[in-house]
Image (tube, rainbow, N blue to C red; front, side):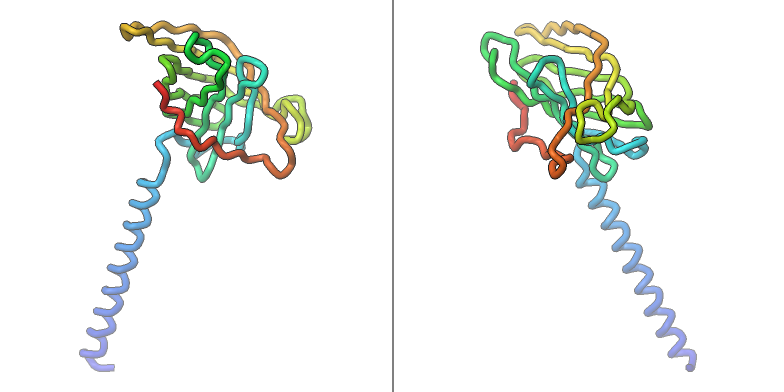
Length: 182
């Protein structure tokens, strides 16, 4: 192979390398832009995706871990005169799972939002098909904003337990509403 053949081979190799680098950059940008704003689970000790009890019978917290991203929502019964007896879905505005530490904050609905900080552990159940396979223990703070934007808060220690789901439904998708009710 002469000098012109070597130069041509080098040019082709350089062109292929430039294309590979450009393709890698595009993939990285797509991955960054496609992540939900909810939160990160890059170092979660286990996949704790599922439904957990909340404050009252029939209310629940849904946590989803998907490719290192945490999302979810609380489904709870309204407490105000305007929403009493109706179930409200409050989606996470931010969430994180690091090791066994769990935290999330919901978006406000009708002037109420929640913040949870705690940890998950294995519960007494021996299977995900039984209630209590995981438990979340920590502090739940309920924030309330009145008509004049005065914010009050009330904190309490809570324990939410894994709610068993039928074998084929261990991962649950959130409802189709966006939960951004004000």
